[in-house]
Image (tube, rainbow, N blue to C red):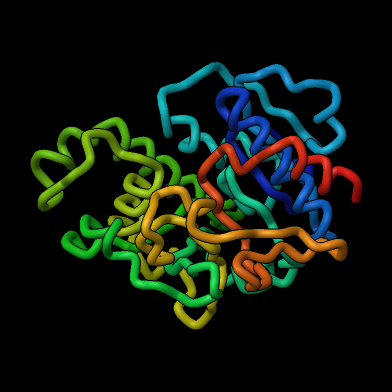
Amino acid sequence: MRAKTRDQGYLTFAQGTEYLECAYLLALTIKTYCKINDFAVVTDCDVPAHMQHAFDEVIKIPTMPPFANECLAWELTPFKETFKVESDMLITSNIDHWWVGCRLRNVCFTTQVNNYRGEFVNDTEYRSLWSENMLLNAYNGFMYFRHCTQTQEFFTRCKTVLDNFDVYKNSVLSNCRHDIADTDVFMSIAATELGSEQFYVPTLNYPTFTHMKKHINKFKTDNWQDSCHWTLTDDMTFCVNGYAQTMPFHYYNKNFCTQELIKRYGLQ
């Protein structure tokens, strides 16, 4: 297990050069808006010299099967308290106050996501498995955990679920549509088995993020950039269709992470 030498910070996984570029942009946005901004990246890539200033720690691991590396988050993080964020996100405002609320749980998930208008949405178009099996509606896109025994137990359970997903798929879950368990699936199962109420704070409206998938935003196409326009103003306000974005922004189409956008944030 990696020593927890830092108090608080952000952790992301970036397997492959495309995801490493996204992680670099994510780190730049965190350092643009947040005062608590230590950033660690877990990657199987060599980090180019021009990126190294944005990463406070680089943690090299071998290439792993999709999603399996995320089970190692508790072991690998250098932080006593961690915001684990998917690499294809932007931070769009100062969210330092989220640390206080998330501490009400040892592991705290996003359970509701927003559209770009800042409205909590019905996500059942993508989440029938969750409602049909009464799973915690956990999104790992933005989550919190602290270094403690319960967190270790949770990530150990995640590994067990992932390693035995054929049993869950064929014998436990109703109408399972997943051939393999992505991170949201195995983490939701693990949290539900351990007690859903321990993994989110129902009185808080965070952690959360803006999700740019088609049905969440009522777009006609899968590529949200075909359905709306965006801009980054001179005062670093990120806007979509005229709506200022204040939540973490999950753009998920990796081609959004351009050198031009990286340069804009890198100049701050």
